[in-house]
Image 1 (cartoon, rainbow, N blue to C red):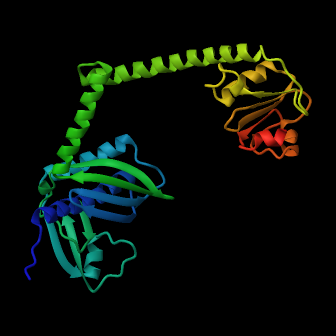
Image 2: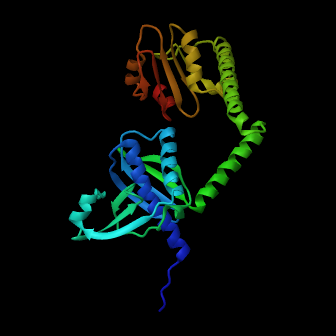
Image 3: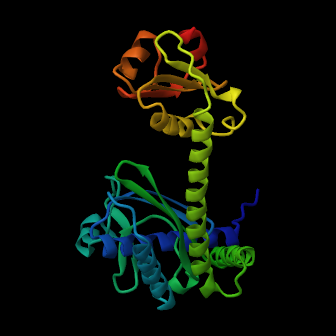
Length: 305
């Protein structure tokens, strides 16, 4: 049997592995002492978990990328030495996870001590071989533990191309011809959307108010009226929350139950009674106060019958 090594795949993992050491060192420069909580290395892809309370800011991510790419451009040599554990400790090499080490360990050093770690994995011989480095995301994976994911080598160029395609498509969609115009145009669109949303909410309020004022209240048990909103076409497309907001202003001293066919309801008690007490008496669950109880209950009709 002949065993062969997939050299391109191996080399891609070596790039990512060495970049992981650079990332660990860069994090130390930005955040101070850092504790590694785990890592994964794949083909021009890496994942690095570390202990921290706060997520990295955009500026910090940019600074880390700049630090690492600077080490890549400097074409720093990478040395691998075997030495006693005591000698390794004297170098200040990072040691992880409470691992147990043998009498002889392997120390990987990048440049003139930019990074020194105990490591048994394979690495490139010079940082220039990494090509480039970019952080593609960060997330929280546990309490006090954040995860960074990143690309190296050819995947950085592919990632940049994908980002550029997205920018170009967005520029075309919003009707600008240069990237410098993109952010102002998006900000303008968002401002207009907020203004339009405000107008729509105002129109909704007028519509709801107009419909509610035409309803003849018919007492039913403890309620001054029970209103099935689906009986009114102009209310069917509005949420119970929206309707309840206007009803509180119109029925200022009434006890009203609003509900739809899905069982979403709002119980308003705006007189001298408590919505909370009524809900408890009728075994109605939900978020409540003395003025309002709201929730979704498929059995709401049977409970008030």
